[in-house]
Image (tube, rainbow, N blue to C red; front, side, top):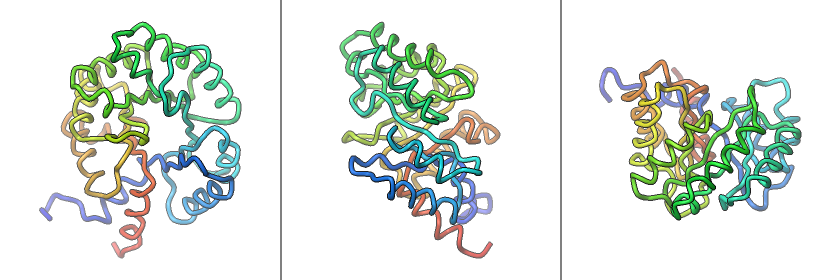
Length: 249
């Protein structure tokens, strides 16, 4: 470790407030969500917890009195192309108590050349999701695959006024990668850093997290790396950092 490189404990402390602690299992129960939230209260609070819409109320009650935000997913994981459906899902999620909406872009429509259809879905969610609620756009970069398609999706999201560009659902074969993150962060930087970035899917270690922090730092600066701009969607990463936080300073 170099003189300027943080220790694992320091890195864990840096990463913890950037985490969206996520549980999107098809068999998640209220008891499972309660246990996840109780563990966060005991061991270290993340930026947000991300759960399916049916668990919003459970998570909000379990984290009452904290600053942890409640995130949920819409148009998930398929990325359908029905704006009316997306608007309904978004409004219901916000009414149930969500603070943040993670919306799947209609990436298949984008690949087919239907940019207007993709824009319509994002616009519907943006209309429903007004401040102070945040809208994160999941691009499913592993399915877009080609750099030009990832870049086009990022530009579409920023033009629509989303608050974050997010790599992945975590439900496909290829999820977050440094290569895709580089493209998204370059687009974000080119637009003045107003949009945030969320890496999600397959991020399990502090070394993984370090790589994404470094990519953001190189393009947008250390001061940009706050929960308002950078998130890491993970559950295994949370497990990995807790032992480091328990070590003596």
